[in-house]
Image (cartoon, chains in turn red, green):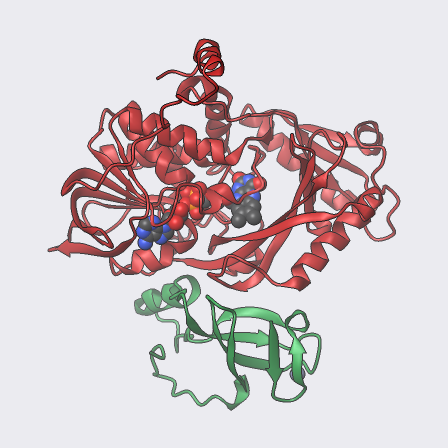
Length: 416
Length: 96
Ligand SMILES: Cc1cc2nc3c(=O)[nH]c(=O)nc-3n(C[C@H](O)[C@H](O)[C@H](O)COP(=O)(O)OP(=O)(O)OC[C@H]3O[C@@H](n4cnc5c(N)ncnc54)[C@H](O)[C@@H]3O)c2cc1C
Ligand SMILES: [Zn+2]
């Protein structure tokens, strides 16, 4: 069924009791052309584009829990394409373009809101770095505006501009950046894939990968063995553990990232603002809650909860940037597991095992990448070659000396 | 999370700085033929879910490097030893 004003009216008059489920709940078949491990944003988007762009529909997405239980349902929903490096920028800009047409494309309201993403700067050196980044964005045809202090004051007069340590001197603004309702992204892709014949299978955990003579044959799961010709791994924070089943050791560490939401308040912050120097960023949800976060806790973790020192630090930084929020109460906090790669950039590639493909290393920024990641990973799986937009994200780039290190931190994942 | 520093006693985790896997081994020598070993050392990680030995620096305390054995799933700390007390033969491969 297509969602429209008419379907809404029709179901309204019957008390919304007759909506059909958005996707089926199929039992696994014995074999598929393609199996995707992980029903997060990237896995579902991959299945959607495999079916829609490449006509490959004998596909299953295996999710160990319920859809949206991973990072796709835990992130702070920010989208942007303000990257510096050539390997990154065209990829993220393609993602932005896909976001811009996504709701029409998959006929689902994902609440794509291009409310602007503003990165604050506090010193001449930081301003110069942002000017450089903005220029790099312009050269890739991406919008960017460098604001001075007055420019930021006009937008957010209530910020703490005269902080002794990090006075606000201006910011880099990408107006096309913004937020998207994260669960709706998972649901929209799941529904779009399902309606094209893809089996989205929940509560199906992959526990082993069967490989014979260097060729992938299928997966062991808690619901039995399932054969496949091609296998795509998109397990985000659990990537190392899943890749181990195929004998791969990855350039990845798993770390916990926390996020927070406050009680609902009246409209206050109409865009996304990042205060990188203080490790804090914030936006306001349509329900009125301030959605905010900071850095990863900093130690290896598979626990989807963090520790209190980070909570304290994030909230202190927030109050130092916006003193007016000091009495707003925090409603909830949660954590998700990030696949922190050795250069802070992702991996979309084939592997040395024939028929085995890898999508991993998204760190804390993979939500914005969801459409382009699915697009490029589907291409890689369908054509058995890298897509030109993800050609820089090869797994062997570390060995070849082509790491893409936007932050310049080196092989220390907790610093990216 | 609390870490029991052998010199300072039990201290809150925020006094410490995390460095990473304590089971990676720096290769001896830097011959071109050893590039795979170097690649492994610099970039590849076991990244286990469960027990792991890690380097932590007591940066907000006595500034000793420690080896903390911890569960990455539950954050439980099992034991802490001073890194300098660890005896390693140069040829030793990864601890299993
Ligand atoms: C607190 C927080 C804030 C964030 N904020 C942002 C942001 O503002 N902007 C942004 O761009 N990014 C953000 N991110 C990062 C982003 O959420 C992730 O990079 C992205 O969601 C990862 O891809 P995914 O959606 O496919 O992951 P997931 O949704 O985690 O999907 C992976 C799935 O694989 C499943 N799985 C794992 N192992 C197995 C197995 N053995 N068998 C079957 N299934 C398995 C998991 O259950 C999971 O559902 C944030 C992350 C967190 C935690
Ligand atoms: Zn100490």
